[in-house]
Amino acid sequence: LRTPHKSRSKVSCQLQSSDITMRVLITGGAGFIGSHFAEALLEDHHDVFVIDDLSTGSIDNIDRLKSHPHFDYLIDGIANEPVLAEHIDRSDVVVHLAAAVGVRLIIEAPVRTIETNVHGTEVVLRHAAKKKKLVLIASTSEVYGKGNDVPFSEDDDLVMGATTKHRWAYACSKAIDEFMALAYWKEKNVPVIIARLFNTVGPRQSGRYGMVIPNFVDQALTGKPITVFGDGSQTRSFAYVGDVVQALLALLKEPSAVGQVFNIGNDREISILDLAKTVKRLTGSDSEIMKIPYEKAYEAGFEDMPRRVPDLRKIKKLLGWAPTVTLEELLAKILAHVGQEESK
Ligand code: UDP
Image (cartoon, rainbow, N blue to C red; front, side):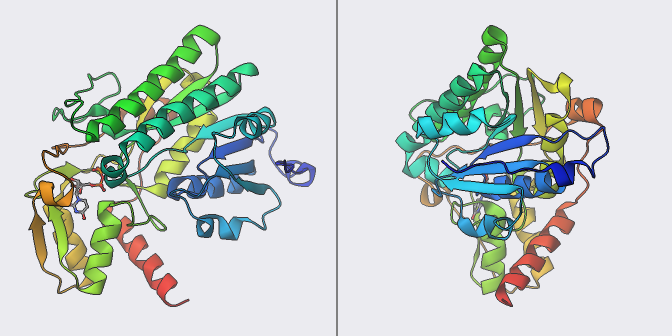
């Protein structure tokens, strides 16, 4: 085992007395959201230790953090329980982001999806329970399922499809994670916070797992057809990762957030067809916008969520948090990042 958290006495004495320095373990910290959260925590003077098996994360994501004196990492799966238990023991807070990501993966590898999501969370909670460590569980707006009564608020019913449609296995596996976390809070007094993240986007998000914005940006910039699945009338609300990680950080610092579920996202709703048009316009691309039936894009009988918009009143009331970056601004940030990568 490595020593995860190095002495930080020098930095601590620079902090205001009101600042609490946390030792934070991030499972899945080499992923897109995890690596942005690691950066935000370091900037806020916390110690960060990442465990990631690089199944969907990438070492490139944490490359520039490696030399930071308060950052360390281990490439391993959270199924390696003795190692995970040791690192949980050395941390004040566990941020559990390790999970199966992307609708395509869920369709192609349903066993891995369910096992990773359910078993991983169970293992994290079991070991965190020993010394009642604070656990932040990253959940997803996918748990709202196919209802279209937007905006979705935290106590709304979850509307799942049939078990023969694998897409809903992802939603159900994350819903089980939420039930499990809340059960640990209720029965064993383990402090947990659940964050339901709505379509989070930004620099470093890979298009490899089918996410729409990295795909559209890549297609527009390379002159390939921009592939709109279905008729494009389905809607999503996209949040900038920098906004999302600030909300996560504020939740960790708010004692009354414990035992609760929070939506985190941006409530500007846009149809996927309009998103395609916006990306085309902002990139000045000549790409055609091509509609592809769901059964070709995913599998026969695929069901999409028709609409997805967060009700943000709960988190706003507790933390005063609200998203700051508009869709156009976040697309501009992604394009600037792509430009930087290309000029390297
Ligand atoms: N989508 C699309 N073209 C793509 C990738 C995705 O039209 O190349 C659609 C997808 O069918 C869904 C929406 O964009 O309706 C968002 O997809 P994503 O996989 O990014 O996230 P989801 O919200 O489905 O989890």
